[in-house]
Image 1: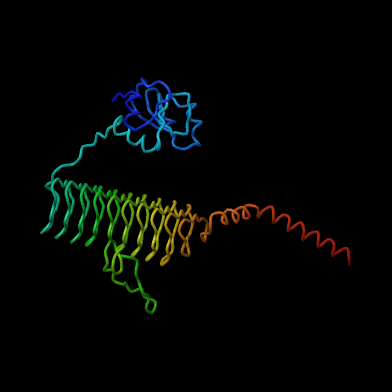
Image 2: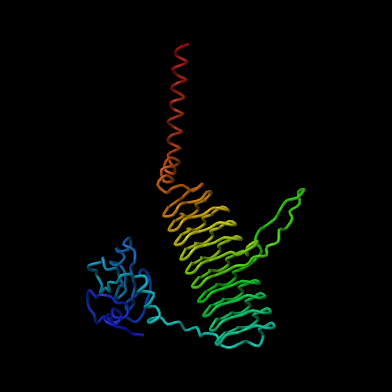
Length: 343
């Protein structure tokens, strides 16, 4: 689909610097782009790539004054570029429709208008699924579960019994929601299972990546609040509460009965122990291990997690250990030499 830069600027509420009649026929990343493509730069660190890209036009922030190619200056280049993807590279995958004859649907199931159910989906008794939700091949929905409107449940997702899922929720393949929490009590060397009879609530506009596990509560509920985005391979234990619009990045783990605030970022491979809280607007750096509660508006890193400025100083000292060892060893040898001269 062809678009002129003038049309693109109108679609993304942008300002053109350069030839407004430049024609764009495709869309691509700045390194891979070729002539005719539209690309973008959102981070100032990558502005130098504009001098090398083969793209015909670039979406930038309003801070960029000029460039070697025609540009469209916007408030948020990432969002503007994402918007243009649907115009210049429309999704050719067709939306599933109807209920496939191989789907197994239990008794007293309520399906809203426009619900699509693909082959080999299993829906147990007393489930409610609201309008325009899609369940792809092999998904499982347990007894008494409720799923809202306009949700997308990708292949082989398991949603256990008594789970509540809001509207516009996306769950990617292989994820398990509502598996039993990891609860055992050791009696005379034998691990006795503690029943997990709670459930999970996923609020509106949550997206959950592939192969995520969210455990049901021992009692009450595990909650993922609205707008939160969860990356692939994340473990969320029983009775965890994650606030609104938080970001949980790949391979992070959250232990039981922990509370994560609003707008929190847990970076990749970070971990949080049980029964603590992480305050609103906090960033937990990659591979950090949170062992005690963190106040709001913090940035922590390292293990055990500390304020990032302190953790950087500690890391700098650790990096200097080889040189420090050499100096200490030299001092020890000098002391030995002085002592031997006194004898």
